[in-house]
Image (cartoon, rainbow, N blue to C red; front, top):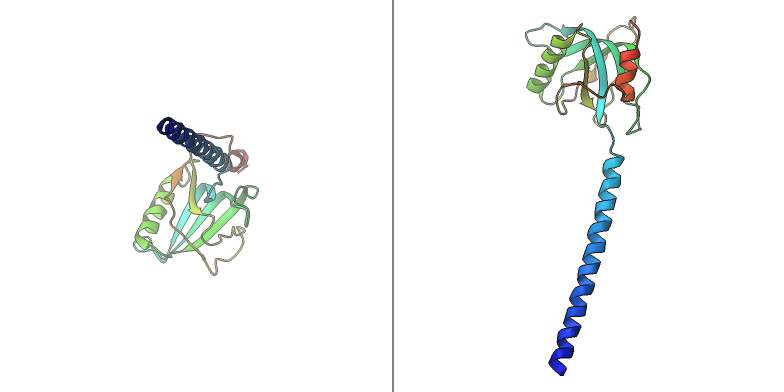
Length: 168
């Protein structure tokens, strides 16, 4: 009878371990779903680009002026954007210069098309929207993130909707 009792105790222990593992996995899945449900948008800028100026020249630019309407990431808030506004961004190369110049060429290609694009990373530096009559001085750093992203859907997303509703 002793072997049978030992067999039963072993079975009960395994059953408890499996229940604990199931609860742990279930808890982790619930936690993961909450994180995904509240994931932040890391894009620094949503933009409708009117025109682009490269400095000192287009062949090997070191800085860029991007004119248009912008929904900028709200500082110190991982989920929200400032109201859409018109003006320009003045940015200089930093980090991966080759990738940044490719993104700048992409920005030139969408300028004036009405296409909404997103770029930058809200957690890497601060970008300041400048008023149209402000002199270009002290450019902000341009950070390369996942590249220039064309917004093709989800026009109800608040920063995108704000740009679509923005008047000329």
